[in-house]
Every structure is written in C-alpha cells, then in structure tokens.
Amino acid sequence: MFSFNAAVMLLMIIFPGRVASMFTSISLFIALLRKVILLVPPALILPSFWGVKGVFAAESMADATAAVCCTIIFMMTFPKILKKGVCSRS
Image 1 (tube, rainbow, N blue to C red):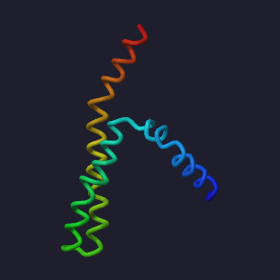
Image 2: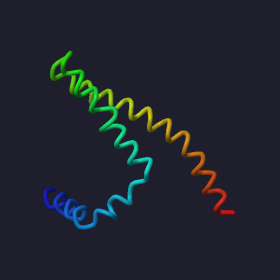
Image 3: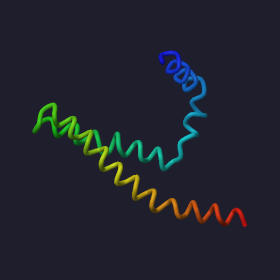
C-alpha cells in the first residue's frame, strides 16, 4: 500500500499539470466550496460553543451542504451535457 501511495504521489509531483487537468472547473469549485467556504468558518466558530465536538459538527455540516450543492449543480448541468452529446452524434 505504501509503494502505491508513493508512486501516485511521485506522479503528482512530476506531472502536476496532467493531474490538475483531470478536474473540471466545476469540480474545483465544489472542492473549494466544501473545504474553504463551508468548512473553515464553522470550524473556527463552533468549537467556541461545543468544544472539540464543534469541529466534527462543522465537518458533517460541510459534507451535507456540499452534497446538496453537488446534486443541484449535477441536475442543472447533466441535461446540458446529454443534449450536447446527442447533438454531436447527428
């Protein structure tokens, strides 16, 4: 397992452009949304009310909110992708 992780990490270090190009702008937005916008503020605020449990609550809240956002984005984007795919086959 260690050798697999080391090999993948080495590939990411050697070819960062290739790795980054695998992700679309939507996926980068969602990753930043979850980790920066939805996680950091509650992780800083909630521990003052709930202690360490606030950090765990912030993580759960960020995951749930990101899942809802992903679903909405997917529902809005997927029909456009299907329509574009059907038009390109004609």
